[in-house]
Amino acid sequence: MPSRKSILKAPVYFLFLASLAIAPVLSQEAPDQVKGQAEFDQAMQNYKQRNYQAAAKLFWDSIVAGNPLALPWLMSAHSQAGAGNNTEARRLYGEILKTFPGTREAQAAKQCLIKIKGKPDRIVEDKGGAVAPAATAARKPVPPVKPDSDLAKAIGELKKKNYDQALAYTESHLKKDPGDPNAYYYQALCHHYKGKTALAVSSYKRVLELSPDSSLGTRARSVLDKLSPGSSTAKTSTTAASTGIAASKSDPALVNRINVLKALDGRTPVRPATVESAKYVIRCLPPKIAEMLFKGETTINLASNIVDKWPEALNDKHHSLPDVYLRDEPGRTYGHDVYIYEAAMYPDSGRLCPRYPQDQIRHRLFHELGHAVDDINGKLTNVDDLKKAYQEDKKHLPGNVSNLYPNYINPKADGFEETVAEIIGGLIGCKEKETRVIMAGFPRVTRWLQIRLGL
Image 1 (spheres, rainbow, N blue to C red):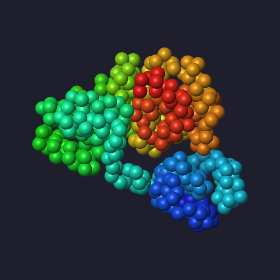
Image 2: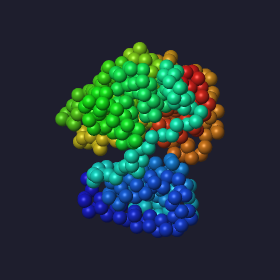
Image 3: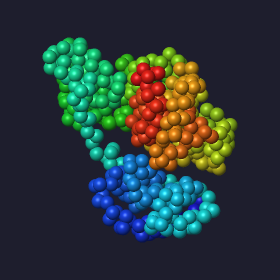
Image 4: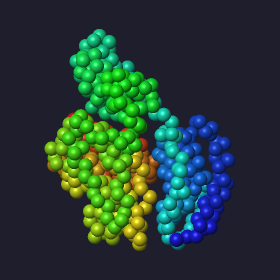
């Protein structure tokens, strides 16, 4: 392992090189005009606190959000180097030289490539206390009700006291957007006015789970205190990962297919938050998809690492990527059985790397469920029409998408299958930036899957 002195020294050197470019680049465009500026600012805070892994993710988020400047690329590379991911840092520095030639960032990247030439990867864990992204640090606002949406129609019917029609519209809206707290709130009102107290309580609780700190959540909590005293006192959050919500009778049956594998060799067991993330994803699924997965006997298996199930896989490599070890993958799907892993593993010691954040775990679960849906439907990826749609989309794929997410177009990395799984994940509830970018980049594939799955 590198000494503490060398760990602290390297990022300071990288930051010095970055400072050569910061002032002139930012002067080209005011911060409030730059897309992805919020992510960039948050990343800089983490970088200064030596939370390099968190910073690297946020700098990349800034790029994905549309930040056109070279600086996020440079700082992303610096963060990877600070975290000891020298292979990835070298790749990013090389991208800067090709994409932003002649800039100050390119000059800095060239010097850094010399600095870390031949250095092996030595993962350095974050110091802790990472600064949360701006999107999660602030209270998440309730989304506005679109005028022509089914939800707007539901509200209109509710005002006319046509509760059954209003409920039908809320159900229709929730199939398209299963995470909208507005829909659950008006659904709760309909049940409440019809005298269906148990159903109303269930819907009010969903509002609290999705948007506890909003005005909508406050109203739901106030009603719950009257209808079901004590049911709203448990600590809630905008994601199920931090709620500790127990499975209830209203949960889809698929929740009962969550299996937590025992951690071997003294490793830390799977976190309760990861179990709740799995429940959250299942609750977001369109009802027909949840039922399809349940009837297809899908299982969701949570483990600290793949070696908890298959110890012999410690040194096994990916079937088509010779440089990727199975122990470093965050998830896999075998037929209808989904496996989600909390962390990669250091090869020599058998210790776990820092655990993946819950948003990444939820994203991966949606993706792997996409593979399961593909398999349950007789391998959609074997259908020629879908293959043709993929090839056509690939011809017109924007350069920034292929550069940011090369695995989706890499035949060696099963790019076609990964694209289909990611898009299905988006159609069944995933809202991550990467998912949205891939769906927008592959519109023919997205539309084909949407029609085929009836979503």
